[in-house]
Image (cartoon, rainbow, N blue to C red; front, top):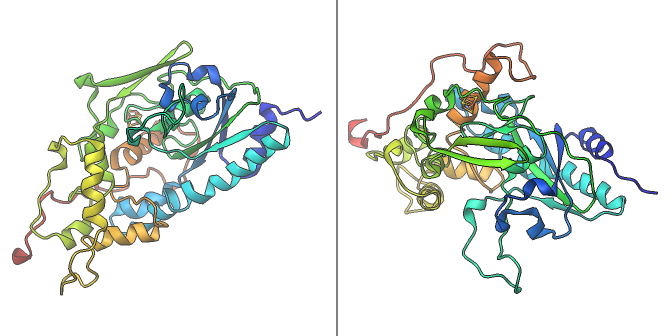
Length: 351
Ligand code: SF4
């Protein structure tokens, strides 16, 4: 008999390099909207296996010091971690599940914010595209909690993880949930570190909350337009490449009030499209540095801001408070006064 247990699943995943493997039963998704529910993709799903692999602390060193950007996009974000380092062992784990006679749906963490308006393809069905909220799935699988900054926190690595999942019709024992408030102490270091002003302070009272079993998880209602501008190269304070390519440009991201989608519409074409090659810009890219990051990152997504507050300030704080199990011999991550550029790029004539 091919018995599949939670222990077999976890051991197999960890033997293949996944740092964390947790399991949720499908009932923990009862409150999820249909277009974000695993059962909308796999109606027979009974369990959701959520896996995490660490982002190296060193993936951010170059950005933190203000000297080297490609490492984070290439190794720690879309380039290899999300597109290779996790999918390879995830796929092997899905094979293990199917070798035991159960169907396994490997899930790439899409973004629920970008579901186009659509009609169901069949009466009674849900419209495409269904996207799971992968961080909520991580909570449901007992891997951690969502911190004030909406970033997923784990006991071992703090926010330094990326998540993927497998849906299966195998019935597996779920992991215990991590109690709300066990990892995030509401220190507000993320708010202070986010120069884009995307994370509200706790005193503003802007929150989002969900309930899983008896636990209520609550976090700050992050301004995703500002977050996207900061992360994807729309903020002169965080991008030296803008200062090279757009002399005279000013944008105070902390005061912008556009949606996440409109922020994408602004910063992707502004970063990546071509214009006329000129003497100063022989490549013709609008912002050549951003275009190169995307290219070196495997031609997927690219990161400019490098999660200054929500990730770097957060794990710096969690490590200092000894919340993270993984420790480092070289002391705290933030080692010197942090850099931040002006939101006004000097005109070429004044340089
Ligand atoms: S920095 Fe991290 S621990 Fe502190 S409030 Fe923000 S999410 Fe919570």
